[in-house]
Image: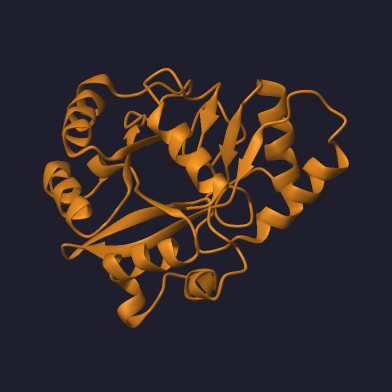
Length: 217
């Protein structure tokens, strides 16, 4: 396991209900998929907020990765820049239910990630969650089940199935009420947290920002 992957696992292992949105945000979007912020606007805002860790998880594209990486290099004189993780949000089938997988910390140039960065949901066998999880792992990353309480099947069933096929973690802290000012939905998130803790899976959090502020959705 690489040092970077070990660091990412450590970050995820220490996430709690207070981590997002001002310290850690591992789920947000740019206008390169369905968001409203440009990659530069997003990382500039992340810096101004004081985020310590951030990942852009655009749908089926990693085009923002090089743009933001270059911005961080050009601005490495600034103090306390956020640690930027590669990320992606992938549509896949879990127990026959269409869900979203968040990939984090993978090699964006890996051959294994290519079927998932074509701008649209993958086809054929690549649409199966177990194949997507394996692909993220082969690319050196970590797989997270996004917002488990937003699907047609009960989140307890989906989390159990995700665990059985090798997902590393679950997006535990999420604002299902989609408030203007992000805050986790306590009752649902606490229940998800209990199940994920019992399964000894990693925990993630993010605003799932599609708008103009990283402090809300």
